[in-house]
Length: 68
Image 1: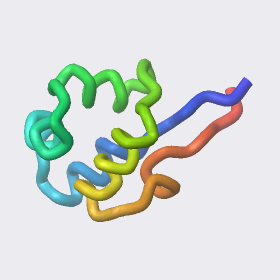
Image 2: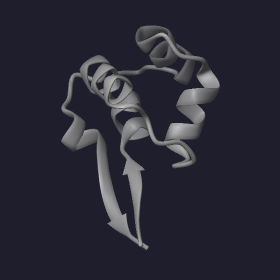
Image 3: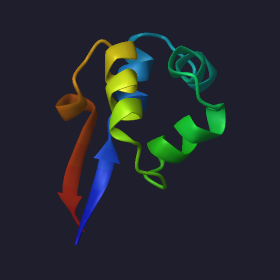
Image 4: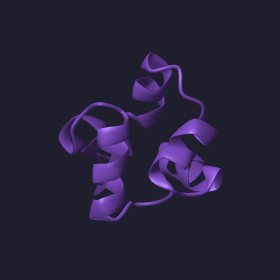
C-alpha cells in the first residue's frame, strides 16, 4: 500500500519558517501543518499547490508516494 509522504518540514527549515509561519502563508491552522508533516492528512490540490508555492518549490518535490 502506498502512503503520501511530505518534505514540508525539510523545506520549511531551509526557509527558516515555523509551522505557524507556513500556516499563516497558506491560510490554515498550525495543526493542519502538523498533521501534514506527520502524514496524517492528505491535502487538497489547492492546499498542496499553496504549500509548494510558499516553500518556493513544486508539488512533486514536496509531496510523494512511498510504498509501505
